[in-house]
Length: 184
Image (tube, rainbow, N blue to C red; front, side, top):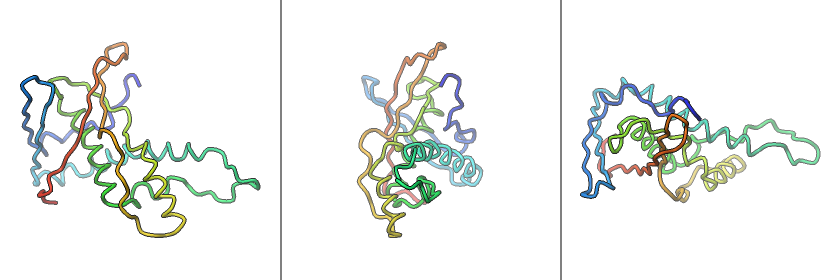
């Protein structure tokens, strides 16, 4: 992990999003409000797509690794990829939740929470969403359309800061929310 490239480092983010921060009196809680400059959306869209794809590649790798060796007694007759359809075949509510997790990572790595920079998001927690993975397998087997599934419990994102020796010196728990009245 030492010296890894940040998945969610985002060069054009300060032009795309305006940023205001408020803190609790004890400075233990911070609320960050981001507002989009829609005129900048086309400029950052390709970079954002790349970040989302990189974030999901970890979960795809994990799905492939879980498949491991076949338990079929006569050999594995299929060459199917266990990550086929991930995440695009999942229900839009699941995809929105995943995007919130990724966006929490973008904020942690790009907006210096608590005045501290160099936060790292080593992995996204949606890689541990067995309900979604089981539903994806069901969709493959039945050809049905995705239905809403229970969300993954827990925080949206965990970020860490490390010292020069790679030892974790701080942790950050992130939660992303989107207002119901936002425009697409």
